[in-house]
Image (tube, rainbow, N blue to C red):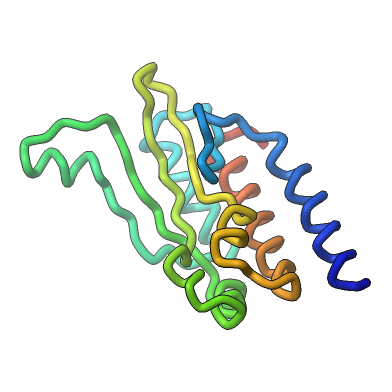
Length: 158
């Protein structure tokens, strides 16, 4: 009975958390949050908030800069890889394949209308993708809360 209760709570929490987000088109397991700021300010805010929340920034990949280096022009697109091994490592023990999706990636990008977005993989989607057992949903809930908070703070929607 307890696993059913935990999974029901997780499903309800996920629905509440993710219903407040804007989605850019078909989400395909991706949550996108509209930013009030330009890309540079959004990236800076995302990094600052991540560090304040105790997360580690593993990488910052500027796709637009990389493309420009080979003569290709793409709109501003920057990938920030963040995580907290205290939260992610237990998930890797639950489902080893989830390590391909951890640490989490937050994509800060500008659409054709020059609107900036922060996008990330939906933890519920990741859990389903890797068949994470119900006992590990508490860690997924922590990740969902952290990503929602980071995105909203960096985007200026909180």
